[in-house]
Length: 454
Image (cartoon, rainbow, N blue to C red; front, side, top):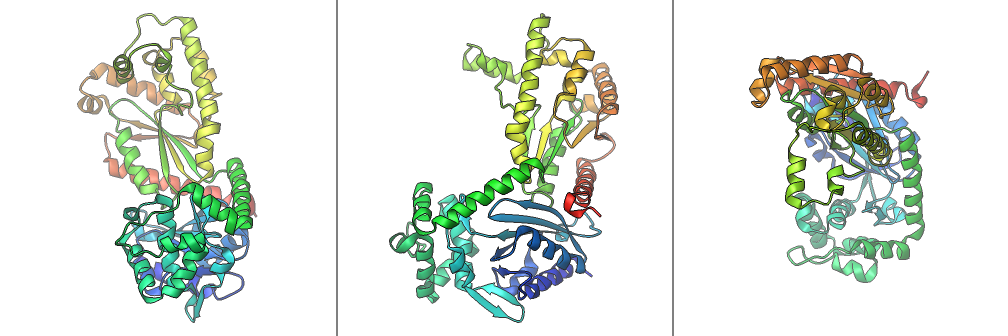
């Protein structure tokens, strides 16, 4: 069976399941558009059932078609499920699918259409239960338009669908526009798209929700708080750190991996450099000019006199940033199902602390390392000295050998460490290996989750 055929059969099964009470969803778009999905994503409206029951039903339907749900991210009004074929050829995008279940249609966290109204905009046939074409066109257009407030940010196909709805079914389009914004404000959403069309501001949208759908607004807020707290305790996302000598290819591999992971395995990605930077760089606290500050931040060099007091202060400052930054910046991203990447991490301080302004006994540096939050994976990218020197002309052969040797030593003592020789592989090959590792980690985490244990 081809990958496209496998995806088509899964979508057929989802459509048929929507006719049952056990899977109360409404599909958005016409059936003949589904097979053209390129890996992501499919939007459905969930008009009943808990997230737990919906995800359980989806898992059963997917398993019968040879698919599995690898990651589920619950965000109040929205549940995102990432699916893959059970034995995927990981280089093929057609083997991955993202399905978004919308309990409420929101823009910037504010519900824009009454759930009861939306649940009644239904068209049934033997293939499934659908939102009416006009309602589907309205939702597909209004949600991104009200979020971005610019027509250019809405895909042309959605703009064309809404324009067609205005022309062919003005009464139904008018009823939907009034359900979104009220009678007066809704008139603006009925304008021809060739004219200037201004979206309501966040304050106006909030006022409209308070006026027309206050209970739904409260329900969305309560659900976001509940799922946010649950995600904070047991996050769906993953945190990886990349360490290695200068010239080992960290930045290239990180960029390739981010593009591969987003919306196939996790929602999105975020990169930090060395630490979270919840606390600013110390040199930003110094009374120096902007040009001097840029010079200080743009170059790394050894200080002639560091001193123990200065080193200890810098180490304590660093530890506070790692701890506070993790819980206040990194953990919320993981709770939202994001892939957080550190391009360099604390392991780089263990290799050469003096280049970062710290001159303290290595035993103390290692002890403090136990207090630094541990990433899910620490990837050490290495290469032989000749490769490092060729990539980084300012690096001597002796320094290249020294860095490679020290990183290998640190990698042996790192929990969750993974070492890859980038000198003998292409960046794309390394990316594929790491993608497969992440995929395996996510599947393993799903199997050991409390709800899935035997």
